[in-house]
Length: 334
Image 1 (cartoon, rainbow, N blue to C red):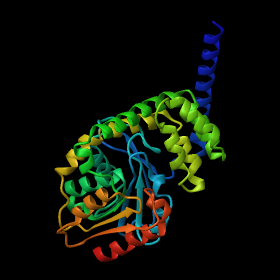
Image 2: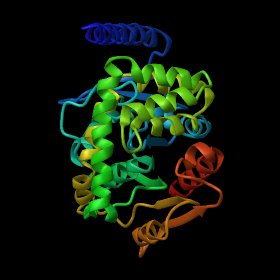
Image 3: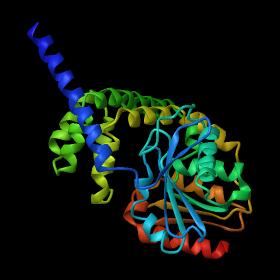
Image 4: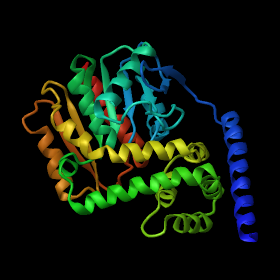
């Protein structure tokens, strides 16, 4: 009986801790951009920097990322372009998704958000990882709105069209742990772990991550490594976003749809006249490099560059290089 009482007290205390934290975060970290209504979808957060009269560069984040993933690059690009980053449904400052996370839905939501913000095309689209799959689909769906594509260490498409059993297990594990993370977030466990992490501690957050995940790597532990790569000023903001259950719910939905979205992307080729620049991390595998090289085969305006000494979060590690590629591509397009 005493044990049940203690569990109940901990659950109620965690829930109250979470509610108080959510309220404080809303006051401390308001959205820097505008939240735009998307017909039939969620309100999406769109953050613009630079002159609206300049050429427009639109940034798309990775599968677990938000507009903050481009914190190091967006202000550099804003010096010479209209620099636009946004949050997909369920992530960052955007509302939770109201439709399935299909490529078609995500691409139409981005187009609708840009229209709602009166952000005029054509756009140079720059994306990281999973986001590269989406900008490919955007270029296929809206070729007249697309000036060029820049892909930063893109996700494999061929590898997810027909994933092997090991890949499926990994994907299912990630989705399951994301669902578990959503539950833990409701009772303040994720908030406690990330608060300690941002304050400089790593031991207790990692212990909480392992204890909550059981076997395998937990979503919380993965976030610990990723949050550390962001600018110091952005780290507590990302922590506040991932302290909410809807971020984990969104992550699970994006993971679960990855194979079907890869198959959809294969049927959406990028028109050959659209310039394409691919930046690969130094850690990219031979299979990934070969696939990416095949994407530019036969294209007149295309390039594949492997950047030495970089990992998957290339845009955070070498922001000046990425911004320079964007500038050079804009000059060639113009």
